[in-house]
Length: 378
Ligand SMILES: Nc1ncnc2c1ncn2[C@@H]1O[C@H](COP(=O)(O)OP(=O)(O)OP(=O)(O)O)[C@@H](O)[C@H]1O
Ligand SMILES: [Mg+2]
Image (cartoon, rainbow, N blue to C red; front, side, top):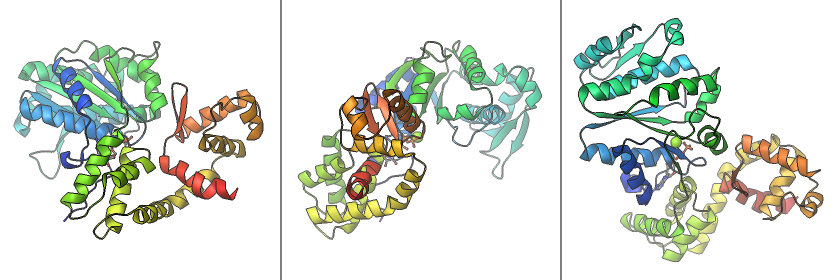
């Protein structure tokens, strides 16, 4: 028997909680050929949501073909075009004979090199002479539209971890090329998502950026405690153990209803429960979870300056006016200009997030650990 909770990357339907509004939103926009940008802090559930919504849609609508492209290990523009062309061809045609035909038909200036993996039925891959692509990558970028028109289908490109384009040599010029080509697409559509919320927001919400008004922007919110509570109770029950609604709600609350950590923590609580969960079991499980992350958190602190740590202390203590005179002097933060610098540095290090005026920890466990085990002794 597998574990009752799942955490890591993309999850399947039985572990997936709610997000009905977002699923419908994504499906509706795909059907209307409107592009979507999805933004949220790390591990709230972007990739899982896109998978669930697009899978459901492509199951009921056979003319919709989904093409996932994960940029997590893509560091250069050259690699991008290679993986883009390969995945689009594979999404547009399932048989290798047709994939080859399309590759030959659709390229007029560029000459793709075709190669097969061990299993030729699935693994056609394309590569190009970079000097040629550099001059004009349009033929590659227009593939989704050309194939969609030719085959009377709709290819939906799902571009995950989009923030990784910041590793490219010329990220801005790259975005301009994408936008310049994709804005004319009527059959193909695009879902672009990624973490590093502040950066994604800049890319898609700044008027001066190429992707401004590319489509609908959806900021993911957290799954509510009520949904988590029901899910945890249900998963305990189907897996031969019991937890009360009240304790299930507490489990999610302790990790601030953060998708990844609710699943991880609930799993730990379930493992520690013999038959019925108790308050003590939850406490013990939280201790275990903090132990597990402790080395990581200590390391994290090593990379922070004293004022940055002091700022986190103020945040842990729920100080309302982080740039206020009293907070600055109480936590020795220097000047208000300095506080702005600290915030920016901590956002860049992905330790805190800013939503409007609200500053929060990205990782609720780090906050909990600081509160329980660090600030107490300092
Ligand atoms: N709707 C959901 N219901 C239940 N659990 C979820 C849901 N969405 C996400 N999770 C939990 O969070 C984990 C991370 O989800 P996912 O990888 O989809 O998030 P992400 O926002 O794409 O993360 P990253 O920022 O690292 O790319 C999942 O493995 C799962 O444990
Ligand atoms: Mg993801």
